[in-house]
Length: 404
Length: 169
Image (cartoon, rainbow over all chains, first blue to last red; front, side):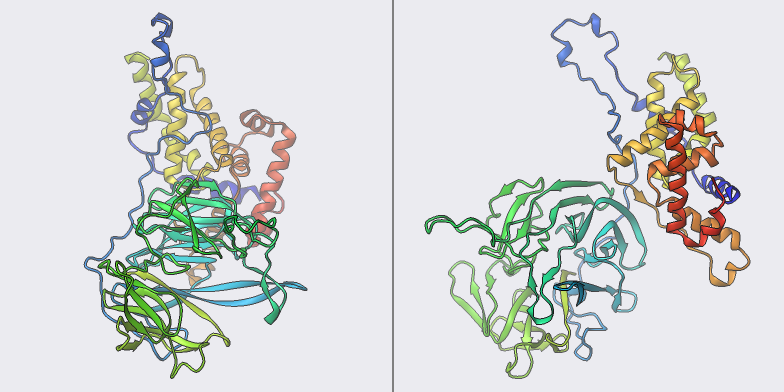
């Protein structure tokens, strides 16, 4: 029925708005050619700037950038808990950090001897003070909790949405040519890195308890750097780290190769936002790149909580979160002396200079698989339960912490 | 370009920019800002050939069609506007046709640039296949197969349109 198509096209076209200054824009941007170049002294020609609009190049954009919501100042620092529900139904927060989102994982078979991990994301909803389950393939909330990046798709996504947390409206959609499996905001909340893969990376070999990373090599292809305001997205190729299984044997004196046996090798931002890092299974736990994908040394002075984009150094720069353990320890950055030990499993993030959001154990820690988020002081003497305990063997949800 | 040329160019833009913007709006799947980019790019090229082009509007439109496909192929990122909300359920019965048009818009915006361009040329500009082929610089057979695939894609994206689009050839 051509009628419907014609009517729709004409009615839709009626919604276009005609800018008043199109002629001025065109005249400003007209293609400059070296008219009269023959009259110029040979030798000077090369110095003449000739601007030609390339056939395939987007023009200088005059697209108005979207307004990103403003971060609250000062940011709230109160302690918010939900110790009754697991996963939580009310915001969990302490000091400078909040649980901006969490995901629950489930496994589903993809073949007789392969499984994949599926995440179901729930996102903080300021309208209700709780969390809202979402259909997105990946979610990341920008520092300040005002805006989120969401990936639309089933497991992998080719549309990146900028979501206003308060209105729940998508401010813009950005089309990606290559499918992405994760997104992460830059520390200043203006850019997003979207890691791209040729196939879904969370695939395990084996079934049930026997399932483990396939070590077939990660399908990572690279990443986009996306300007959240303008929607400009640039793709960079970046090969994954090798799995380590098929690497040639090396001599005892050779440096140990940096490897990662996981299919998922999502990129994150350095704390100062000038570099990217990729996770490694070896130690150190990450390798750094320039935003263009060139290998770089680790930024000086930056210390990270293992496997995360969160600083292990306290806001005042004095103390350093230690590695997993029971107990854990916090040390002095300069002297290395132990400043305090905590009876928790993992130290996740600094809430303020004296308190840390951590993974605590239930009761007397007889069973490390039953645990929950707590707020623990550096000396380990004060502990506040933030979230209900959960048994990670029975069902799993994982909190994502973000600066408020 | 002298002052007189510039004056004539300004008059042309004033007169024809509504038509060009309407076309740009459709080619970009309803993205006002992308449509403005497209129109001003075409006009910027037209300025340079102002003295030699006989049919400036046709020339500008041809640039727009080809440029949009070229940008799309080159992976240019588009920022889509938030879609208009569908009517509330109680209004749907009364406004079945308008709802179908909303669904069709959403489906059109998910076509490739080339697929959308072919449908716009055929059903908005009402050009015969031969002229569509000339504008896009391809064969009539390609136009025909692209139109066929475009409609199939619309039916796939929006199954509720299947009946409405079934007889379109």
